Length: 164
Image (cartoon, rainbow, N blue to C red; front, side, top):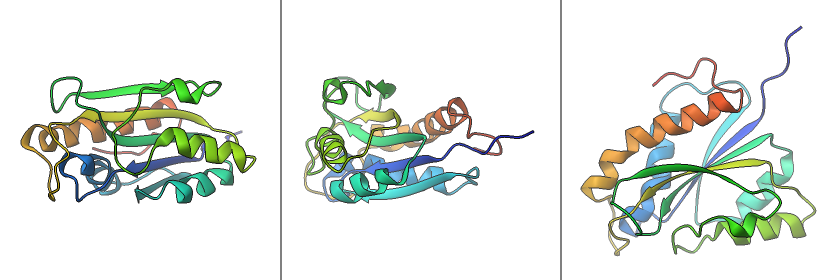
């Protein structure tokens, strides 16, 4: 007997017009360039937080948020961490673009939904100045972040057949 593949949503978050804040969409493109397992959907949400909140009402088993992290470390450092589903507001604050994940989580709750198991794959930014394109250290981090997303998919039980 085989079980159904878990449904996992990969959400690229960020504003491509604010330099390194475009890390999430850029990494999502790298992940989506390869095959995705059954049940996995990759979406570039940009700064559309309510769209993500509504999509989360569809009963996902897991969520992978790919986002720029505030400048609190070496630019280009990739980090993955799980969000506490009981207290999602305690997750480290992500970048200061117009989409605040804590607000998305609160909107989801207000809509009657529950946050699935959620992992953030983030990268420390160098700058979020008005410009298109990632800084050199953040651009170099994209392949590592894409590999981290694939590793999270495997951890969720959805990684079979995902290639780098």
